[in-house]
Image (cartoon, rainbow, N blue to C red):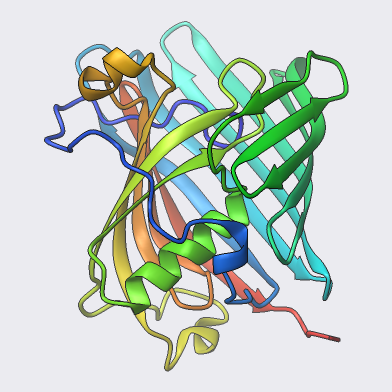
Length: 272
């Protein structure tokens, strides 16, 4: 997964085989997201016995603009991982555009490791009622005979499920990676309880908004006869607000996790 490629929780998760959510098509997702810029401070979370990671620090910036007919999204994640053999600096960048209806997603990603380009991808995802097609700039096109949600439509669908009182949401989600372009995303939704926002610059933008604790597990593609035994590849948890802002984010990797602490929040003016 390009956006957070190594998300994972190493313990066994008793989650049933992924199923596709009803009304998950782009036309069923109506809630608009306000444009906002969220800045997260990254630090090392849990480590497992298999890891060589001894420290981590960095920053993740999520910048969403409502451009009336859709959204533009820019993400950047820069993190330095300390190892006994030295440190690795990862710099990930995403630029994307997604229509309001969720039927078109244009994307461009690039990842650098210690200043050297490691991987990149760019193209268009076109979504129809019962399928989708990806036109990559530098790779073979691919198609899907099932409903696929682009990233922002997925967030909006989870919010709608939470507002409807549902405790679970599942869908096929497009990420942009060439080798693994889609994942089966299973999200558990629960009340968030009391949240502390006094450490956030711009916390007033969260006042009065409903929130939920989400726990999303991503399963890689598998053959039909392997779905029930498929192993999740990564996981993230956090507090999701009804305006699309996420706080207390934990990015759970194969053998370690990163804590992403929301430090700054700014809501963009909407000119629509």
